[in-house]
Length: 148
Image (cartoon, rainbow, N blue to C red):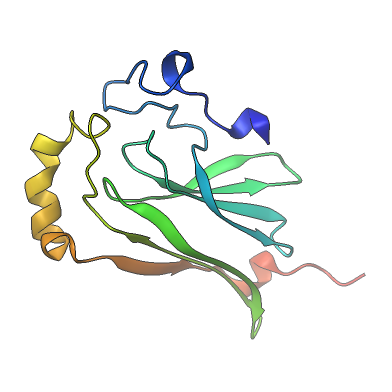
């Protein structure tokens, strides 16, 4: 798993930001906060609460294929939270997540994007009091393991 975790850009926190303001590589996990493992999917789900990514993410890491995939990109300043991986309810597998609080601005992390995004956050997320909850699922035949 260490190869999946982002190093800070420039070798340490607050050293260097990318064009959007990230202090850590956005293609890797930074500051994991929520972990859930789905035995059926053979996947570790990782939610971020980072002060190094402008947008926090929910990641899926398949332990068999060793593939890391970004599943959810939270709105600016929000953390990925409320993570659940439910292996089977009536033949269905679910991954549930939510985010909060949108527009939790940090300086200097969000300084590059805040002038553009602050009005959109206020309009789309009820003056920063709005959030969202969601889930992913699929065809139950796609996630069931064959019985031996």
